[in-house]
Every structure is written in C-alpha cells, then in structure tokens.
Length: 361
Ligand SMILES: Cc1cc2nc3c(=O)[nH]c(=O)nc-3n(C[C@H](O)[C@H](O)[C@H](O)COP(=O)(O)O)c2cc1C
Image (cartoon, rainbow, N blue to C red):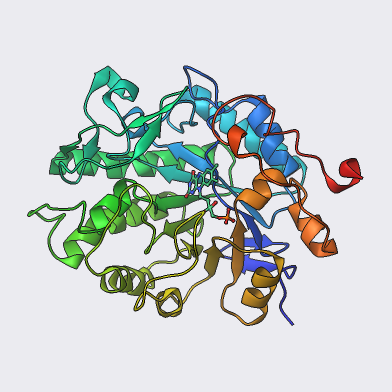
C-alpha cells in the first residue's frame, strides 16, 4: 500500500517520501542585497529529510519585490546564496525547489525601485498589508501593466528559473497562488483588462500559460505550480472560481508539470469551503501529481495519501517548527508548537533553534 512514507517519482526526480515542506516566507535574507545567507542554508538543511522542500517565495527581479529581506534570484550574489542552500540541502541528501514570485499589487512604493507605484493587471488597490522590515503597512495603489511590461515579466520568470538551475537547486515552483501577480491576472476581481490579458478566461489565463511555457523551456520536467482557488489571502475575489480554476487546471494537462500544488481552503485558515466550491472536483481535473496543503495533520495526511486523494502533502507551520517533521510523523511523536511572533524577520530565534526530537528529550 502507498503511504505518506512511500517514495514517489515526479518528472525526472525521485522523492524518498511524500512529505513536502510548504513555501514559507521568513524575511531573513541579507539586508540590502536580499541574498540568501549561511543561516538560511542551515535552516533548509535542517529540514532536508522532507521528500521535497519548496523554498520561501523568491523575487524574480527588483520589480517583483513586495517586502523586506525576502530573497531574490536575479543578482550574482543572490545566485551564490542559493548555491549555498542547494549544497547544504544536498549534503543532507535533500531536494529543494525555489518558489518564484512577482508580488504585483501586494507591495508599496517605499519597497520598490525608485519609489515607483506597484504594478498589477489593473489599477485595483488591495485591502492587504505588506511587511516593511519593522511593521505591516497598507499595500499601495497600483498602476496597470502595459503589454510590453507583461512580456518583460515573463522573461524575468524564465531568467529566474535559469538562475535557480545555475545555482544547483532541483527545480522551481511557479507561485500562482495567494493573490500575487499571476493570481491577480487569473481572478476577475483584480483583472479588469480589455486587451489580450483580460476579459475571457483564455485571456485572464494567458499570463500564467506564458510563464509556464517560458520556465518549462528553461527547465523541462522541473516545474511545479501553486494555485489557490479559494483563498481570500490578499483581498482576492473571483465571481466564479470553480469555472475559472476548472478551466485553468484542465489546460494544465497539456504541460509536463512536475506537480500541481493547492492549499485547500484559506491557507493557514479553515479548510471549509462555501457550498459549490469543491477542491476534489478541481483536483480530479488534473491528471498529473497533486500536492495538497493546508491544515493537514498526521491522520489527515495519511488518509489523503492512502485513499489517493493526494500524491504529496505539503506542511507549512508544522515544518517551520519541526526540522525533523518526517521522523516525528513516522514515529507519531509530539510536535513543537510554532512561535508566530518570529515568523517574519528576525534572527536565528524561532528559525534554526527549534529542537529535534532527541534534543527535546
Ligand atoms: C510564515 C508563513 C509564511 C508563508 N509564506 C508563503 C510563501 O512564501 N509562499 C506561499 O505560497 N505560501 C506561503 N505561506 C502559506 C503556507 O505555504 C501554507 O499554505 C499555509 O501555512 C497552510 O499550511 P499549513 O496548515 O500546513 O501551515 C506562508 C505561511 C506562513 C505561516
């Protein structure tokens, strides 16, 4: 029988188990350069027994930035930082994908090159907050991207994938979830465009598929995708998410993605959905590997794998607080409790100092 601890082949990669570390923004890259540090490498290496680590979201360009001390993937120094992480994870026999993002409207002029306004499909401001290094501030008023700028961002995604590959990472995950730029194009609450990138479903999905094609050309077989159909994170709304995401997911079958990753419900919140919203319907539309996330505990995860509802389970907060989560779940051991006050920014406290089971004992 297939269990949470059975190996799995995704694309050209073999994972020793089906437990994935979910992407977790921690705002601990080097101040000023946003290059990953030795401390970041230690943090990921501690979690290398995961079947797969998905990194915190990493900015594909200076234009993509929406917060302080999130790592970038576009300067030589940042690529060197990622190389350090790749080597540390590989030395512990792990595998790590980088989650590539552009935040779109979830930013603020004070965080962007030249103090410029955030960019988005349409000039619709988010009722959301961004981290400026010391506190959370309101997201700024965005301006709409023109088509040439959209094409530049697609190229930036491809370049970031190339850089991640050059750094020795194992693949990339496209961040199409949680109200960032790709999601802003997909959902009609944020996309009011009337050109080739807005209006019809095909047009709203055009940016995502442009990105999938561009990064897949850079790194065939090593591209995963995260979507969050029912997340209200960052003030997202769509008039008909089942139709929007049903369309997108059906079309994903034309691409050799390593996996589709979906938080089921509101990430970090309830798994309950409103009537008519059904993750399983969407999940079944996808013929490739399905990675489920959100609110999973040991029992829920084991059942999801054993019944075939999911091929992989991503754990966020549990992996944050338990570097040896795989061993703990295998032994049904108690888990450390995550300290929410050290999630974003800070130093090694609440980052690399969560004890392993033998240390706790
Ligand atoms: C501190 C923190 C940072 C997060 N950063 C990201 C991120 O960079 N990218 C992303 O897609 N999701 C991010 N998430 C969402 C998690 O990946 C995950 O979807 C969420 O925690 C629910 O999973 P869990 O119930 O296993 O924690 C973050 C969550 C937390 C708590």
